[in-house]
Image 1 (tube, rainbow, N blue to C red):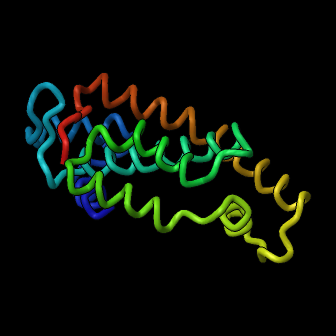
Image 2: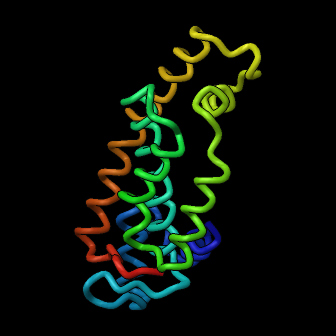
Length: 164
């Protein structure tokens, strides 16, 4: 977030109106990024990129929770990680994330009760349904934003696919 705030503070007001105009300012006026999506870090483009990837990971997890009520959250998390973050992580980060998912992902009921803001001992069918409906609504908002965000990065040649 600090990277984004730093760019916002130096960008002229007319370049702060959209994600695209802010990123174009950083790319064109500051000239810090290379062709082929090679981003310099620190930069707002890198900050926005990782925010988007993190949200895409969460969205993929929530889709998995909604898609298959019998699948364990650990498996859902690992699948979401494999599709959204693993391609951009080096060996050490991959090991750290996978180990974390294996050791820290709670069972479905506990996860959903926490997400829904319910006490686990008071979490029943009605509360689960309300939580799942909230996830569906969240995804309806997030998915178009994530799609536009990805398209913006591709259009501006800022989609850095290197591993970190």
